[in-house]
Image (cartoon, rainbow, N blue to C red; front, top):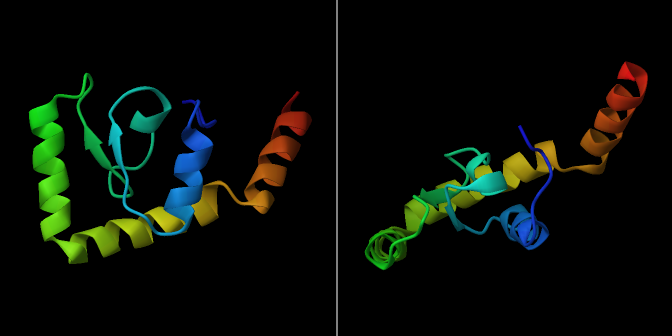
Length: 95
């Protein structure tokens, strides 16, 4: 499991931290994000599927809020400074 955001991932993490709902391709590092924290579309992304997913999100503000809240909680848990320090220490001690 890769736990480091790939290119563009830092911008996504900042958006999720603010409770934004994100649509990502189910590929690479993005595929490792919890399914309840983002909306995933199958790679390669097809325009029709992306249109359907976006339309559904536009029409369901409650779902957007729920996903955004879970995303923000996930980022606070997995990408906080404290979590970073714990992982560095675990790696150092484990070496």
